[in-house]
Length: 225
Image (cartoon, rainbow, N blue to C red; front, top):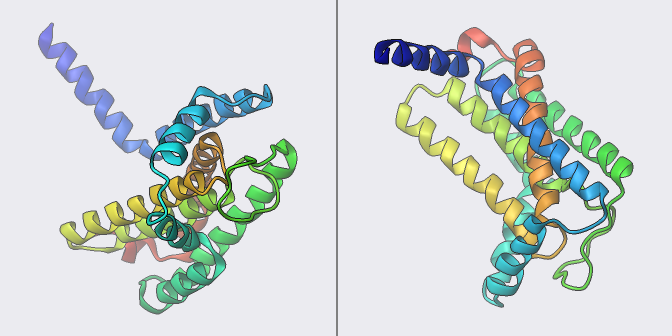
């Protein structure tokens, strides 16, 4: 009996690993739908309230604010353009720069569409920077997950050195998380906006890396040898 359970457990784990992209997309879709329903009710979620208490009332300090502003700017056009040029210059594959640029443009367009559909007002009364437009989902969070998430995916598939792969993926992951936190800290987004942005871009990346990336990058070169 124990052997059968262990065998089924190994089979299930293998199935998850082989379909990890689909699993992540499904989980992200469920979370996004839940957040969308919560936002549709017109009230702040417990998640939003807790994040406000933590990142705004507790962590907000004069010395920390400039750092958070700088982190937030990593999802601004100037920083993204510099990263795109670096990708085009140094990343392997047929058209890595174009691949990253198309991904970024599509993520931005999707964010604009979703914001117009939901039309959630931004937080008011505790912003540290000026922002316009709607709040849900967070554009910076969507851009961060889509752009830096794709870079992490590319490193994982191209880089042969295991240590460098893990170092870069963890580094990009921290950048993504910190950009999201910075938007809550600066008072221009609710936590639900940020998490929803992450979820939408995870779903988008699952589709993009499956359907579009193989057309723009040489998958044979991308395979780790």
